[in-house]
Length: 98
Image (cartoon, rainbow, N blue to C red; front, side, top):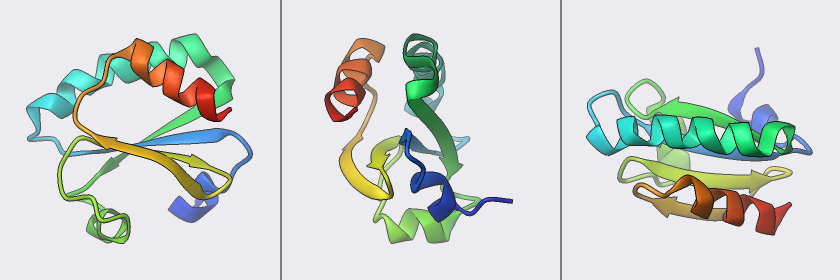
């Protein structure tokens, strides 16, 4: 199984959604991320990380609130934001780093 570091070092942009099952805004992000994936297809990989099940990964990236989205390009963090964003905003941000 690929490690988190393997996943974010790919050539494709990788959007990581740090979330929790108990988080209302995180649930709102699910259909938004689905829409982003639908629009951008294979130009972005979207990974969901449950902060309760993966506390070490959350700690490494200093995720203090959920949802937190972090965009990686070849293993480097190029953008991050906490809170809910609209699909159109996310598509614009991802395209700006492509």
